[in-house]
Image: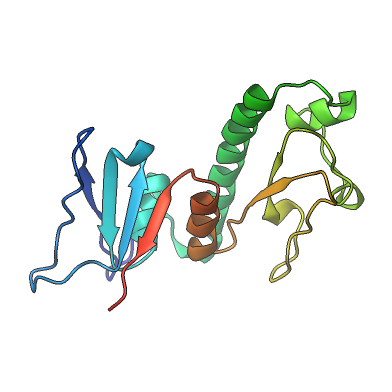
Length: 175
């Protein structure tokens, strides 16, 4: 953690209760709100780094962007495996080829040229850093297939991609 970074303010939210967001000493709201663990914990901060720290404990202790990128990539791999397992359990293996099941179970990799042809009945979860060059856009599957992307390339991209996949909820408050 650098000298100018602060930790997020984390507030537990008991089931059935509305969150009570903290305010700054001047009474104004924090810029960002992050909900994790099904909304039972909310975190508030003015910068994204402290919110990533809530998702990845120890994140702010990483020195430099290279170490922080590596931490986001490791966590993206963890989230990918968990989310992929949930999707496979939800949709079931029926209609998947052996190769598709191997990819879904993490026993095989999907080659770059196979991405657009993904047609399994189970959405595929991938991490962009394994398939997309810096600044590039991830490819989408053709009609009938779904690829869900986790993007660890920056703090904003990482939190936005987790929010889009409903792993977390991220809100930004503007005046």
